[in-house]
Length: 88
Image (cartoon, rainbow, N blue to C red):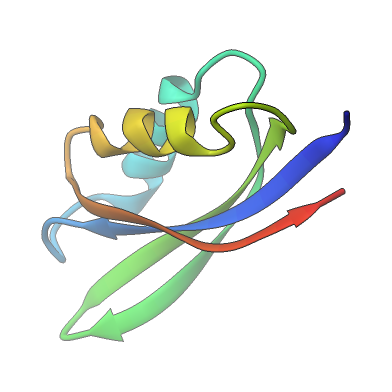
């Protein structure tokens, strides 16, 4: 089995959320075996900016589910959605 790369869209619950701090908290929340390979930012509207981390997880049962749940529990996160998934 190999690894899977997933681009995940993280919407903060307010335009006032410190995105650098949110990035740090997302990285700290990762389950064992997962890692972030980089972040992109996407201007949504009215000052709201989405974070788009590319997460590498082992290819196996559950896929990105554990990462999605961990990100959803981070303070300041409104929603989590997987945008793209592909094998490495």
